[in-house]
Length: 183
Image 1 (cartoon, rainbow, N blue to C red):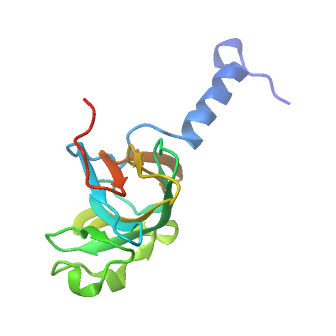
Image 2 (cartoon, rainbow, N blue to C red; image 1 turned 180 degrees about the vertical axis):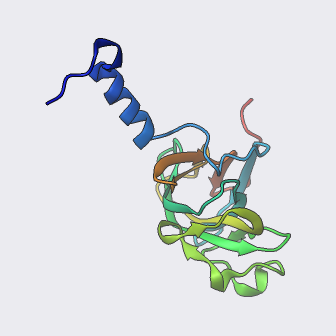
């Protein structure tokens, strides 16, 4: 094995550190587009399920983004993510609907629900057309009257690196009419 001159040797820790940075990245990725944070509270109705489609996913990169998973962020007890879809939409997002999936006649014009893809199989091409809507099904357990998630975490891969994007919208499901959040 050839020996490099002292000035060309790299410490092992530096090399391992560089490999960790190159293979796993939680910094800003191409889906990290600033959106205004918000809070949604919705009653769940008799089915205790809702559809929430408030977040857009825009790929600002130069290659495809592959969605690996969608998870709840810091959910309280009694809240379940039942499904996550990536749906191409026109100018209007899917929005909020009682039940999941939403009834076709309740969807805004331009929502291409039939072209939606389960989040774990979705690819989002570079560019901002079409607009891609993260649509989730949420359920409130019978054992609780209220539950909240601080948003949704989208795990994805871009150009061989892993990223995690957190949506800005806090969501609360209520068995009763909603109350303003504690400030």
